Length: 66
Image (cartoon, rainbow, N blue to C red; front, side, top):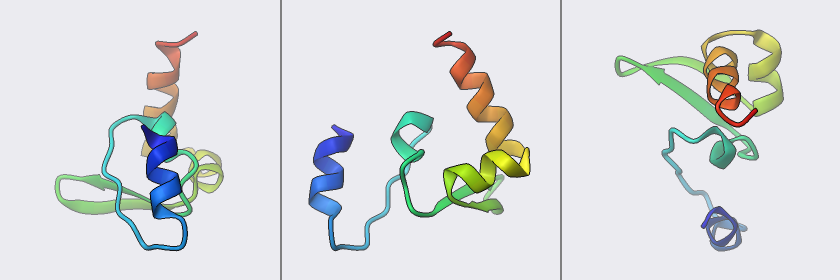
């Protein structure tokens, strides 16, 4: 499904809301919300490097696939 979304989104501004990190890891901009407030923002690599909430949740979800 995400491949179809990426094809549709090419050249457009789009908003994708997901709890699946596999869906958002290739996004240009990721915004992490907690209790209605922006907690972190950046791309996947910068958020992983920051070792904040996004990185912790990404690791937690990835453990289910190991």
